[in-house]
Length: 109
Length: 118
Image 1: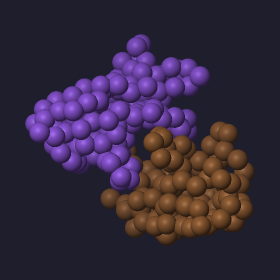
Image 2: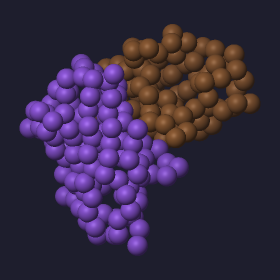
Image 3: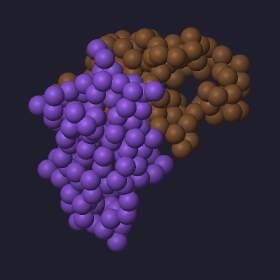
Image 4: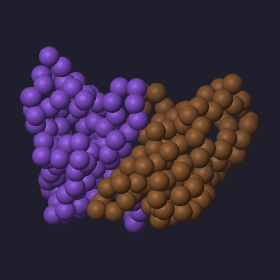
């Protein structure tokens, strides 16, 4: 089973700053099988990025994804007030089996 | 409007059973679906997968043998039968739609809370 690790656990930033979130897999993950979600308190997760770098419908272009193999990154170029939330990476490992990382909380500094 | 609406959650005693439902609307109910749960204050855990036709089903090890996923395509509905419930099954349960052509979940319901406690 592939285990996902996310870092940092919490990222404290100010609006307008750039956020860089990391997702590391215990084994190589196909680039087409890595996704990112945003979750705000009391809400369901929302798909941001699929296939490592493709934005989901309606997602603003300040969100971008990159990476390959075992190291993946979600970048928010300039934080807006509504971007403060928890972010999860997720991979598909065949069978099918899906695993999520533990999350990174982006909070206001 | 593309929408998933879960129902059926509640309080149940350890060892008890519960059946969750997920009603889909606004799209053709022909994609793979999953149940995903989130324990209070914790992260996301995938629970089960069902293919578009219902012929292929998978479960997380934590629920295998206790939970059963099913779907009724003409009724645009997804189900999760949960038996032998344990305290660590306490969570918000989300149904989610698999994306077309990719292995991510592009539509989520609002979730239904399941509490297992005596």
